[in-house]
Length: 113
Length: 112
Image 1: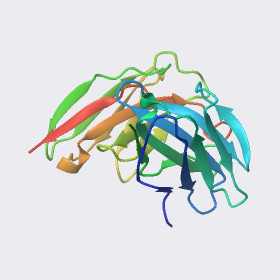
Image 2: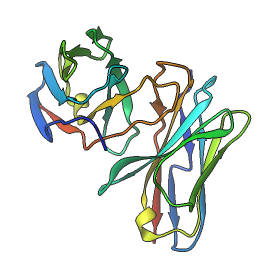
Image 3: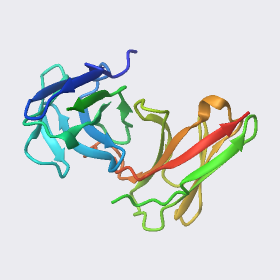
Image 4: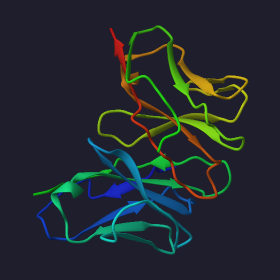
């Protein structure tokens, strides 16, 4: 079974631009969660989508948004990029059922100049 | 905030067992202990999880104390590829609200 895939793997943007990252979960998984990892703050939860609905949200500004499609693929969007948004963005998928675990993708490395 | 405490780093000789400790004194009755690891700049890799009984899989063993306030992840025969940051996470059973709260983790270095 194929794992979680994320595209693109690397991205360079400038301040003020917006960016969209994509995540394809493991086949059959309906939950997709997004995390941001920076050297200073570590791994932080952004939000989780289950069956196209946002089910949980972390403490990030509204510039960070996401959505999930009917095939469970998810996108994350960051608008008005700031230098501090430079990070590794990780998505994780799970079935969403009780006691299942989350499986992470390789991440997208975003650099904001 | 993370509900776990881990030492910042640990060294282990290749071929020896690596015992990685974790304290979670405020764990609630329905919370599981999860272990993930992250090899440099890759996505975290799930290792094992448990509630109160000891668990073993092909990667590792998880020993949870009877009072559930601490646990130990055991890698029975550490290899150089086990060098990574290991995260111990306490969380309700996944499947209701998928949110893992990561702490700083512990850097395990396996030496030749």
